Image (tube, rainbow, N blue to C red; front, side, top):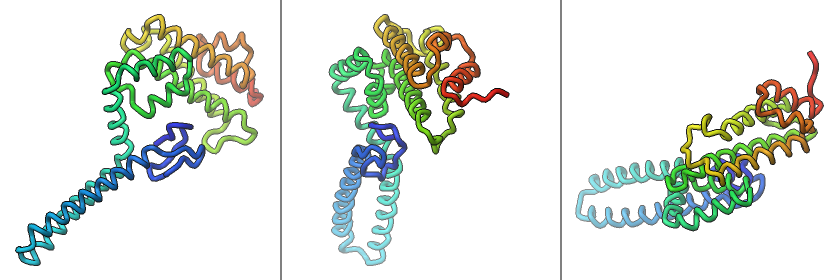
Length: 251
């Protein structure tokens, strides 16, 4: 799973993110599930002992073992699916307060807060709420913006990333830019037309403009070249990025 705050890969067993030290909400949820499980376990244990008090010792042992097996399986499922369970619970809570949720999402969109919009979606699975379908493209593009931004930041480091080489990050950026450009037009999108109102379209256009500004500022790609990115192939974009970063080698 990913940390809702910084997006780093963390385990459901991590109490805090090892990268940004923010608390892991899913760990808390898992602990609550564990406590609930223990209470149910103790209750069932007492009930079994009471019901089997008059039964033979052998019958009680068999019953006890069967219950332990079932509870262990349930507990393993809770651990293995803690992320999905907690996300489902959060999504259901959002559905009960749709008015405020829509106001919050609209606020992120209006403020062009791509990071908060992406984090909100990662935490609550907005895609699963049909009443928020109109924000799907805005949310997806915000996710892409964050991913590209993270790749750009890795390219600023002197040493290559432990995850990708600089060339791989340039390729990654070029590929995700294609998806951003495709999302700008409803003709290239499989999402509902409600995602392309004037308000949402303005958000998408500003997001792409802000991404282009980042590429000019951090990757040192000439502004006139970045303006042509939407019509360029991924390969040519990648070469432009590598030249701007000074890692392009003529063959």
